[in-house]
Length: 199
Image (cartoon, rainbow, N blue to C red; front, side, top):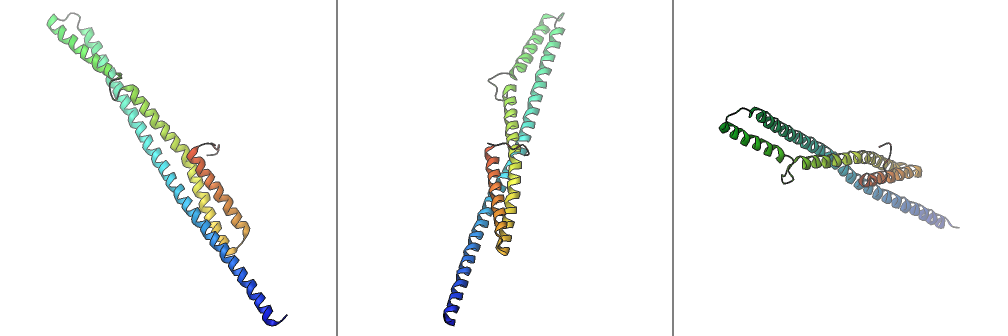
């Protein structure tokens, strides 16, 4: 074997190794880009879950407060009607008829709070408040999944970046495992199919 043949063989081996290394780095760069894109989506979902949790908590609180105000008004009107009714005994007929008209008006207004024809009757307010509580609780259940998914995806990106420098396959494997777990946690956060006891 001549020196030129040996040199050509060495050059081919070096070029093959260079192409292999370049392909490995390219695929890792694509992998990191995909992880970063998934991380941004998970981050937005986590942010939306937090906003939904806060907005629904405020809505539930406001609706319960409105329900309580309606209830207090209803009780006050009924008490006023009862007191006025007690006072009608012994009143002259002209005043009694005015008092009875006022009593009827108070009772009618008190009954309107429970009327199904009213837009904001007490039953509909309770239903709205419970719905807001349900949305708040659902968003609160989703939020930790997205938080942990974000953390795992960030660690996966860091490990993949370390792999590009060190070329240690174990680091890339750890990155892929953490990335997969992060994606699964995000999907479970969306669907809530498998409630995890520690979240």
